[in-house]
Image (cartoon, rainbow, N blue to C red):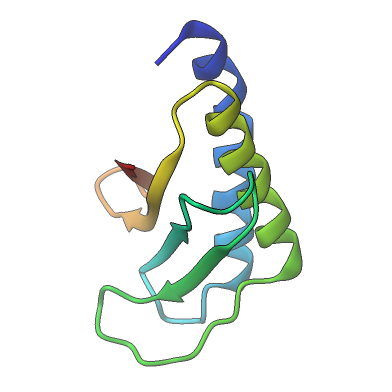
Amino acid sequence: MDDNLQKLHPPIDNRIVQQLLAVIPEGWWSIVLDVTRDAEAAEGSELSLSISSDEGYRDIVMPPREMYETVIQHADLFASHRQPWSTLRYRVFFDETIDNWRFTIDYDYA
C-alpha cells in the first residue's frame, strides 16, 4: 500500500465505523459490515452492503444512505491507487479489556 493511500483511507474508515456504531442495536457487542464490489462495474458502482451480527442476533439493520456514500468513497480511493478490492469487511466490537470499541478491516482483492 502506498504512503498516500495509507494517509487518505483512515478518515474514511473512521466515518464508516462511526456510522456502524450509530445503527448498532441495543445489546449488541459487535457489528459486521460486509461489502461486495462488482469488479466489472465502473468505479464506485455495484456495491452491495450487508450489516449483521457475528453474535448470532437476527435483527435486520439497514445501512443508511450516508454509509453507501462513504463506502463508495473508499472503493473509489482504492481503485484510484490501483488497489481495488472485491470484498471488504468491517468488524466493530466492544473490547472489555480496554473498555472501548475497536475495529478490524479485512480486504479481498480481485
